Image (tube, rainbow over all chains, first blue to last red; front, top):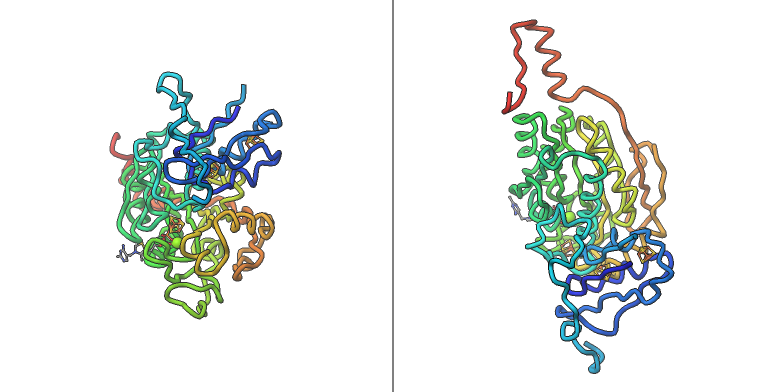
Length: 66
Length: 303
Ligand SMILES: Cc1ncc(C[n+]2csc(CCOP(=O)(O)OP(=O)(O)O)c2C)c(N)n1
Ligand code: SF4
Ligand code: SF4
Ligand code: SF4
Ligand SMILES: [Mg+2]
C-alpha cells in the first residue's frame, strides 16, 4: 500500500518518474503549497520495492508491505 | 496554477489522527517538528538524508553511539533535521568539531554530513589532515558543484565550463577529484554515488559507519535552483535522469581516473576499502611501545 502525505510533497515528480512499474501519476489537485502531489492510480501493479519512498526528498511517501 | 478548476486538496483531505498513523520509516531519526524542510523542490539533499537514515538503521549502530556534525550551507542543514546527537557547526569546521568529539569519546561514531564548499573549500585543510591521521570519521560530502546557499558561486568542485555566479562565462579552474584527494590524503574507505543510486549509497553509508577510521563518500546531488538553473539543465528531476543515463558503476576504479567533466560521464562505485590503524589505535600502540606500563590510554568519559 502506498501512503502519500500530500502536504509534505513539493511536486518534484521523482517518485512518478522512477517507479519501475508506473504506479504513480500526478494528481490534478494541488496542495497548500501549490504543488501537485502524486496519486497511486495503478496501485495494484506496485511490487513494494520502496524506490519511491527512498528517493522522495520530502519524506512524503510510505510504502506499507503487508 | 494553470488550471482554474483545480480545488485545493486540503479542503477534502482526510488528515489522519495520530493514533491511526503508522510511523514513516525515517521518522525515528527525523526531527519531524521541523518538517517540511527548507530545501527547494527537486533538491537532492533530502534524498541523501533518507540514505543516511536507512544506512544507519542497516548498520545496527545504536543511536547513542552516533553523532552527526554539519557545517554551513544548504547541505549543512542536515544536522538540524536529524533526531540524534547532532551539531550545526560554523562554516568549514565540521571536521575539527567532529574530531574533538571522536577523540573525547572514542566510543562514538562521528558522521560529517555537509557540502562540497564546506568540506573541501573552506574546510579543505581539516579534511586532508583528518584523513592523514585516519581519525574515526565518516564524511558524507554532498557535491552539488557550487556554493548553493550563498547564491551559486563557483568552488573547488565546479567543473570547467559550468556557469556560476562568480564564473559568468563558465568556470576555468581545475576542480578537485574528491575520491582521489581522499585516498591520497589517507582515507581507508572511498566511494562515490549520485542521489539516484539510493540503495548503493545506503549500503556504502552502512559500510562506512562500520569501518574504523576515515571513510569518505561523495554524493553528486542536484541543485536545481542555482547550479541547474544557471546552466539551463532543467530541474532536479532532469539531473536525476542525467545521472540515470550518464553515471557508470565501476567499482575499484583507480581514483586518479575519477575527474568529473561538465555534463559528462560520472564514474561511481566503491573505490577503496582497506585496513589501517586509526589515529587512536596508532597513538596507543606507539606510546605503549615507548613507555610500556607507564602509558595509561585514555578510555573515554565513562572510564
Ligand atoms: C566563515 C564563513 N565564510 C563564508 C560564509 C558564507 N557561506 C555560507 S554557506 C557557503 C557555501 C556553502 O557551500 P556548500 O558547502 O557547497 O553547501 P551548499 O549550500 O552547496 O549545499 C558560504 C561560502 C560563512 N557562512 N562563513
Ligand atoms: S514501491 Fe516501487 S513499485 Fe510501488 S509505487 Fe513505489 S516505486 Fe513503484
Ligand atoms: S518524490 Fe516526494 S516530493 Fe517528489 S513528487 Fe513524489 S511525493 Fe512529491
Ligand atoms: S539552493 Fe540548491 S542546494 Fe540549496 S536547497 Fe535549493 S536546490 Fe538545494
Ligand atoms: Mg555545494
